[in-house]
Image (cartoon, rainbow, N blue to C red):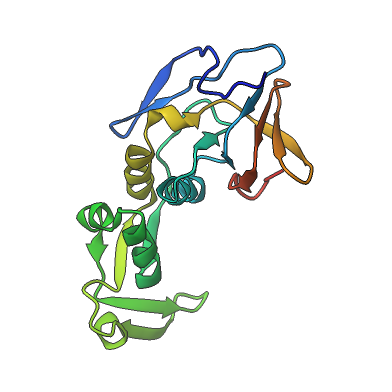
Length: 193
């Protein structure tokens, strides 16, 4: 009989990421064939956001991240109003507002750093409280990690491929394990399988 990843014995260990405890537990079985609803490959901003949206829609979601620990890295981000609306839908807009700073204007520069345009945000915001927020990528990632929680993220699991049929998809991992789901989201960056 097929067992879910949550029913199989696990090897629990954890890492602390920006105050959030992130699990590295991986179900242990020689020929693992676990079944979950939705599989997310990649634990970055896109993968964690997709996880929250799918969970909100009532799905069982597991995230598989290839790196052994999540490091908070990156630079500044500009979060425009459409992204803030999406964050509002998954319940994170207030946390992002508390972390970021609203921007008064946006500058567009040429490659030689010459200013081509300087746009006052209130002129294009249509009365929105904060049409543009600036924050560090690591701060956004920490907000997402705190919302997702430790039990959903499996670290050190590198996806090397997948197979599918009319009803299911199987993520294949470097250590020979497979996990079955009915949807696979590839959010593991530019070198995605």
